[in-house]
Image: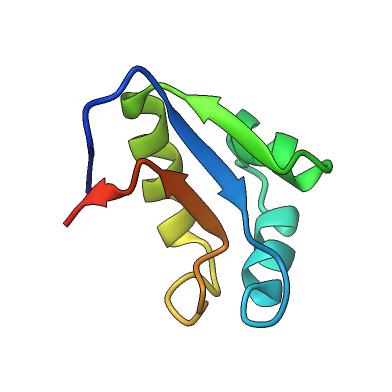
Length: 82
């Protein structure tokens, strides 16, 4: 997954119907990255550099519930390259 060149990527928490299973699994995970931990503790957005964002999104995709989440629990801006 590649993130568009930018000085930062904002990851926003998406909560509600369709994302709950992922958030529960992320909360139970032992290796939560610090940016996601911030979101788990109430932040609605974190800013990362592109490399950090790619790592967080790669981790997020390994957590149970990601594949079936609609919408995805983490919304990056700018959007990753397709």
